[in-house]
Figure 1 (tube, rainbow, N blue to C red):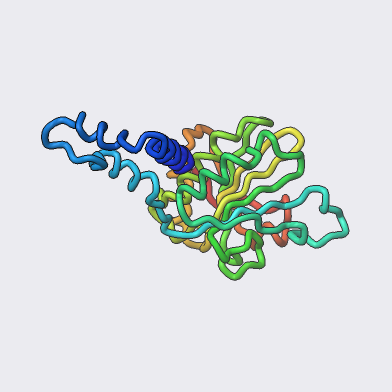
Figure 2 (cartoon, rainbow, N blue to C red):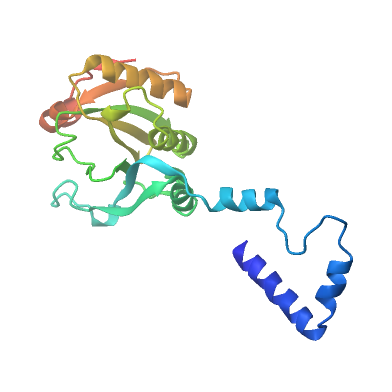
Length: 229
């Protein structure tokens, strides 16, 4: 828009140089009460609305776990790296519209969106005593739910928003999983509230379970589900 306006301005100046009386003729054609060069209030308001950024309550960081760098010998999380931190809704949409959605990610990929300065790892001090809710989808079917989850996070839609660390979408051979990480796994009422709200936001009808990170570290896939909604 700014480029277009600059081009128009250049064209007007060029025309005036060709015909020095053009401006005078234009002003003579004005209606009574009009002022030459006066900008319409609505146009000015539109410019303000477009140019004014909309800050988020928290800054968020996208992380990507590089599938090509993964191997059985590497330490878990060592191939994970931050991509970009955003703090306004405009930055979010600019990023979201230019990155692959889950259905386009390679099998084995993990794509995270966490509050800034919280690493999506069990070892992070904020996450250490937490856990996660998980929803599963058929391969290629999680795109919409991933977007809704992101919007709920950055839009502070959860009653216990301070409990939220972030979310991760994991692409596997036959399915895709979205997990919502929280801080205090022992706070049952907060976790149940988050789980119920998340299901409602996604319109997800199946039962979902909550696993403590501490259990997952010790028992891996044998970790039992502590809460369900």
